[in-house]
Length: 454
Ligand code: GLN
Image (cartoon, rainbow, N blue to C red; front, side, top):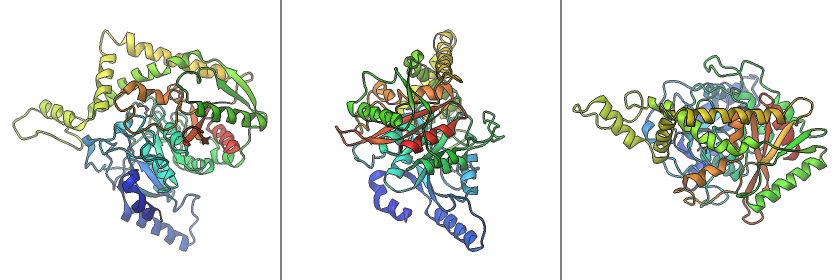
C-alpha cells in the first residue's frame, strides 16, 4: 500500500531519492514467513520506514544529497540500518535532504527540492525534508532523520509531524555520514508520539563502533509515551525564545499550548538563558569548522565521483576538479568558512570563542534543569515561522539560518528535544510545532509531556 502511495504522489512531493521496491517487498514477505512460523515479532515488525539518505545501506545507494557521492553503494550498513533490519522494519527507500545535511529547506539537495505536502510550493523543512514529507504525505508511517542544528525538529514542525533529537550519544553515529561530529544525532520521526517512541527504542543504545555512544540503558521512552502526563511538573518558558521574527500565529499556538500545560497540572516557570542569543553565531562557527575537517575525505580517490582523471593530471588537480563539480554552493561556503575559522591566527578569535559560548549555553541549561529548584522540561516554539515558500530564502543564507533559532541551543549542549504539532497558524493554515526540551538522558520526559498534549 505504501509503495502504491509513493507511485501515486512522489512525483509531486519528491520525498524519495531512491525507492527499494524489491528489497521492501522481500523484507515484508520475510516478516510474513516469520509470522506464519509462529516466531515472536517486535512491535515494529513489518512497518514501513523512510530512511534519510545519510545512513549507509549495503544494498542501496547513499548520496547524502550530494553529486559527490552519486552512484556510491556503501560496502556496509550503518548501525542504525542494522538495528532497523533486526527489528524487521521494512525500509522503503532513501529520502531527500540538503546536501550533507546543510540547510533548513531541502533546497540544497543536488537532486532538486522536496515539496511540503501541505502546500507543494512551500519547503518541507531541512535538512531532513524528504523524511518529514514522506510522513506528511502518508508515503511512510515512520522515518529517520538526523539533527545537527534542528534537521529533525524543524522539518517535523513545518509538516505537522513528530520528530525527536535524542540525547547526543543516544543513537549510534556509526555509518551516518558526518557533517559536524560533535553535534550530529540521528533520531526517530513519526506521525504520533507513541510511534516515535517505539522507533526510538529500536534505534537507540550503546554501540562500541561509535566512541561517543553512551554506555547506559536507553531511557524508558515507550513507557513514558504510554503514560503521558504533566501533573506536578515544572515547565520552563525561556525569555530568549520570543520577540522579533516570530510569526503571530506561531506565538498564538505556543501560548495556547502553555495554557494547556497549566490546565493539565503543570507549573510554568519563566527562565532567563542569556547565552541562547549567541547560539546561532556559535553554531555557524563550530558546524562549518567540523565540516571542513570531515569533508576532507571526499578527495575523489575513495568514494563516488571522480572528474578529470584522464592520465594527464595530478591527484591534486583531480581532487580539485571533483570537488568543484561535486559540491554545491552551501557546502563550499561552509568549508571555506570553517577552514578560515580554524586557521592559525584566527582560531582563538572564532573557533575558540565559539567553544566558550558553547560552554555558557550548556551552563544556562544546567541552571534551568538544576535538581530541586529547576524545571523538568523547557517548552518553546520549534521554529519562529511556518513553512516558507520554495525560493524565498534561497539567496539569503542568513534568513535561512534563522529557521533554527530555537533548535540549535540543544545541539550545542547535547541534551534531548522533540517537536510535535500544536495546531495550524490562523494566518496561513500551516502547521506549528511545539518544542519540548529535556536534560541529557532524560529523553523519556519528552514523550511523557508530548503524549499529554498531543
Ligand atoms: N539548518 C542547520 C544547518 O544548516 C541545521 C542542519 C542540521 O541539523 N543538519 O546547519
